[in-house]
Amino acid sequence: MPARLEDYALLGDCRTAALVDRDGSIDWLCLPRFDSGACFAALLGGPEHGRWSIAPRGDYTTRRRYVPETMVLETDFETPGGACRLTDCMLLDRPRPTLLRIARGLRGSVALALELVVRFDYGSIVPWVHRVPDGGLEALAGPDTLILHTPASLRGEDLKTVATFELRAGERVPFTLMWYGSRDPRPAPLPDADAALAATLARWRTWSSRCTHVGAQRERSLRSLLTLKALTYEPTGGIVAAPTTSLPEVLGGVRNWDYRYCWLRDATFTLYALLHSGYREEASRWREWLIRAVAGTPSQINIMYGLSGERRLTEIELPWLPGYEGARPVRIGNAAYQQLQFDVFGEVMDTLHLARREGVGFNEDSWRVQRAMLDYLESAWDEPDEGIWEFRGPRRHYTHSKVMAWVALDRALAAVHGFGREGPRDRWQALRSRIHDDVCSHGFDPERGTFVQSYGSRELDASLLMMSLVGFLPANDPRIVGTVAAIERELTRDGLVLRYRAQDGLPGREGAFLACSFWLADNYVLLGRRAEAERLFDRLVGLANDLGLLAEEYDLDRRRLVGNFPQALSHIALVNTAANLSTERRPADERSGSAPP
Image: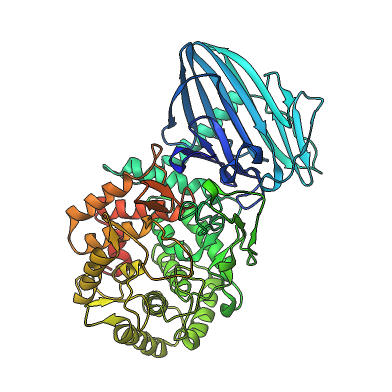
């Protein structure tokens, strides 16, 4: 059985990522990319589906931490006879994905055991394993090869690779696991493990030194920013929503989705988080990824894309995996890529507006893409869609979707007025007013004094918290005040925000959605309720594990993190709320239009 999500740490090299539990077992790793097949899939099954464990034999206790300002993990094992440290990382700037693990003796003597179970294609393929002339051990199947180098004595046992060894104070044993294509030349062993580790530490520290956050929240924000950097696919600049698939929103349930892709709805939040933290280059690359991904016929725009902008993300089920704590089915791919969600047009326009305003270059192709999107939106905005939460049911007129269509027109007009772009200003102004009136007429329930999830519905939705954050109405407008109050009253549980309570066609109730809870804190900031914003922020940060990592949701009954892990949107929201609380230049003010010009 896999560990709790709280027990996992993230390792990454900005191309893929691994999850390692506090007992030294790497239970998840996809190679060579985030969305490749997993060679370690114990996270969604058991050790027989692939893992790499290094831990003491017998009784022990553990403590762990990231080396400050890096994604290098240190786990200290205490045993009755001594102590040792396991340092884990994925090396940066390597031609091939490489995991480095170094066991070091701290005091006394510790007996350690290694178990390496390689199972390609999500635990379904047992590879051929053999020794190679340079002393390494090679596992090969189809297009994939892994090669392990270590001075430890390895042996085969029951289709596994195992080793036992003693580690005394001052001794060290390195292990490097490298992926390469089965038709490529075999790579040479890593010449110096300590030098490679030092180079990776230096690279992470250099990146962290660019963070402009100051004050009490800097450490929390930087840890989230490091997580976002680790979830970035360096070759293209795209940021995956999470490095995992099928970690359930309901333990034991069927709400299990593949999040190893890039969602457009996260774009503006991401850009704010990066720009307000000093990461202009990353923001520019994310913007360029976005332009490439959405280029084409606007009617065919996806809500999500692959790491390089791939559009077809076919969803299939993997029946041989029992799922995380029995949550089935296990899915790869995501059928929601085919959904119609009008809010993505607003997100793209808002993102590119922010990039213009912040001076992140100008791209003529970008404006052409935006003009084409607006032409489509003019004729389609009043159609029903699937909404921000990807309901797999009938299309509806979702209020948030209409609000974001308004945002698209509003940011286009800002480009015309403020940046000299060419466009039909009068027509866009008229349509912006029409959409605004439509939302206020059909998306607002005057009897209850709140906006609602969809036209004609009485249900609430956490996406309504975005209305003031995007500037649709001022935060102090009575309709926004009433909506925030209704969400506090009907859509929160134990102080945390649920996305919705409406039936969505799937069994079971999901947990509190952490990003939405941060949005509530942002609304408190705009409403001048700072003390409440700080309390909610501290509560949310306190839900992170000991390494500062957050999942998508929180199960309030079992007091556990649930959903894919770690979740980029949760960390993006944390960074933005920290900035709203810590700086005079607040993202919530700027996006809502209440900041000085």
